[in-house]
Image 1: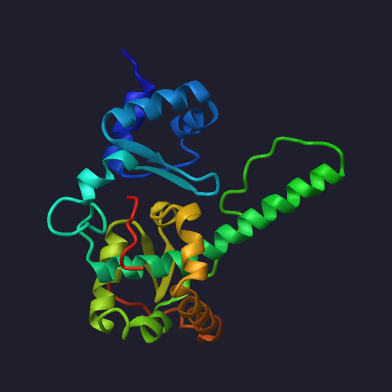
Image 2 (image 1 turned 30 degrees about the vertical axis):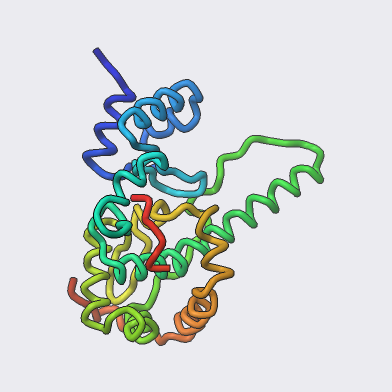
Length: 235
């Protein structure tokens, strides 16, 4: 018997993420009945759908009610269910703040501007949220190392952690540039984490890093490379 929700859940678990444009994903996101069925089945297994209207991918994560059982066993609260070390999660927060946070702020500002314009024009037309419409320049890997190596265990450790995050799908590395991977936008809850980053201890560090990235020299096309802490990743 064909069960599209079961198939979608199986694909999410097997592939770890799916693009928002996937036919089954689109159906679930626009059909309230299908979405309720998906949420109910995931909740029965202690899981939840990770998605954001502006994110280009969806994934599954541990449900809030089960976080204590999954992350809280042992002597300390685990950073994630991927066995990421504290310095790896710290780097993940930094990358999220540098790649996802500015993109999200632009997306929200754009959507609010369009909504205000529509109200001024006295009509309201349903439009899809412009996923991926606001792009953020990739990070210069050398500049990231210069800015954060001392804070995150040294250049060797930071390079190793970048490789770990790349293998898990959080980032993509090309020619000494760090791009957003399919899971980075889903790693943290924007509504919960954004204010902590912008108003907390990381704010000044992130601003300095953005300034360094803006002034970083371009890397020659033929050059390439080999392949807070307390925040919990959703994935």
